[in-house]
Image (cartoon, rainbow, N blue to C red; front, side):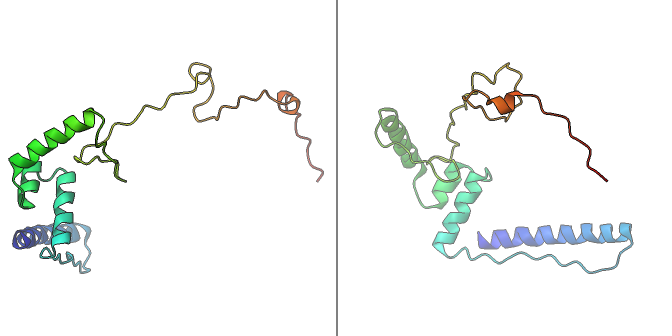
Length: 152
């Protein structure tokens, strides 16, 4: 896989270099542009798994490719996931959401809809204005007096 990534990067760099040359000619500039990629160490199992999960979460690869590349038997994992979903529905083994709001199956967890304050809907109040249950004080209920000009 490391070779495939390297080959893809080289192909991209060749294309990008040609595009940069066209852009330089169109703009009439002569400065040098150098583009490089960081080298990845895919031989480290932890880094490899992290990249694999990022590819899956980004929708680049499908679940079967992800699970199979990790060395697991996909049909067995599917059956285990079906069992886990049944257990969750029965109230056991509730998933703990991750910090990026993705559940253990990589799907976005549902969020509860924020309920608008009853006074805000159709009341003419500006959106975002905080609701205060206190009645206005006498100072805030009076109209503001006009500003007096400053002496020069």
